[in-house]
Image (cartoon, rainbow, N blue to C red; front, side, top):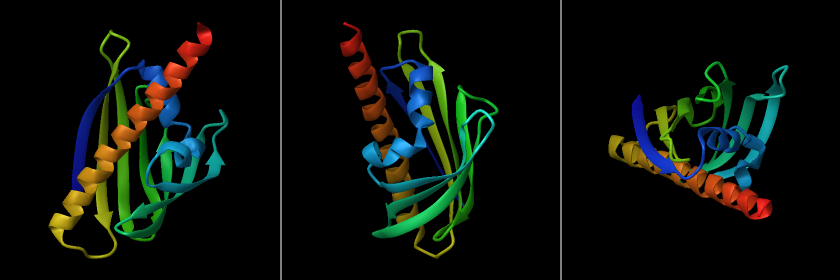
Amino acid sequence: MEHAREKMVIGATPDQCYAVAATFEEYPSWAQDIKEVVIRSRDSAGRSIDVTYRAGAFGRTTSYTLRYDYSQAPKVLSWVQIAGDITSKLDGSYSFESDDLNQTQVTYELAVELAVPIPGFVKRRAEVRIVHAALRDLKDRVEFVVGQKSAVAK
C-alpha cells in the first residue's frame, strides 16, 4: 500500500472549502479526472454517503465507490473505498485548517492499493499526480466560487 500527502493554501474559509469538497455531484464540472458521479445513498441530513465515481486513471477509465464519514465535519472530510475495479483501497481525507487570514491550509491524504500489479515507481508517480491534481482542482474551484459570490455581493 502507498500513502501520499500534500498541503496547499486556498484563499477561502475552511467552511467554503468544505462546502465545495462535499458537493460531489459537481466534481465532473471542475475535477480534471472525474468523468461521472452517482450518489448511491444519503444520510438523514441529506449528505452523500456512498458515491460512485468514473474517472480517468492510468490511461483508462476506472470506477470506484467511496463511503464518506462526516464525524469530524466540517474540519475533516474522510472516506474509504467500498468497491473498485483497479483499486482495492482508495482511502483518504481532506483536512481544513484556518490561518485566520480568510485562507485555509488544506491537507489531502490518500492511501492507495491497486488490485492490478504495476511497477512501484509508476504507482508512486500516479499517486503524487492524483493528490496534487485534486488539491489544485479544489483550490481553483473554491477560489472561483468565492470570487463569484463576492462579485455578486458588491
